[in-house]
Amino acid sequence: MEVKLLRIVTGEEVIAEVVEENAAEVTVRNGLVVIPQANQMGFAPWAMAIDKDNPDLTISRTHIVYVAEVDPTIRDKYDQVYGAGIVKPSKKLILQ
Image 1 (cartoon, one colour):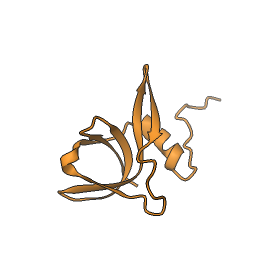
Image 2 (cartoon, helix red, strand yellow):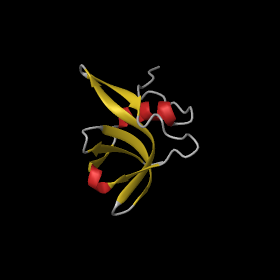
Image 3 (cartoon, rainbow, N blue to C red):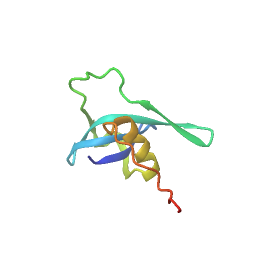
Image 4 (cartoon, rainbow, N blue to C red):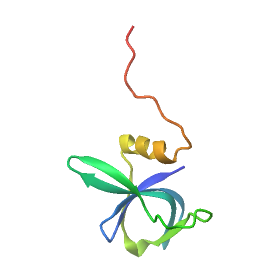
């Protein structure tokens, strides 16, 4: 699953799974909007009223400012929401 950060012309930053893309459009699913909160980030579902049986959204590239890689820490949080229950262990070392 390729997860990307998309900046939309409305100013929203959306983290979503890229299903398909071409020169004109990007199709995504499981979008989360990044919400800045006093030195932290929160997330909210993007397109909450979408049909759950057909969750893909196609966005015209004319409405996308940029597409970027997601920070690994943020990606872990995304995976906790949409990663089928897979939670990665922290990267702390165990000392014996």
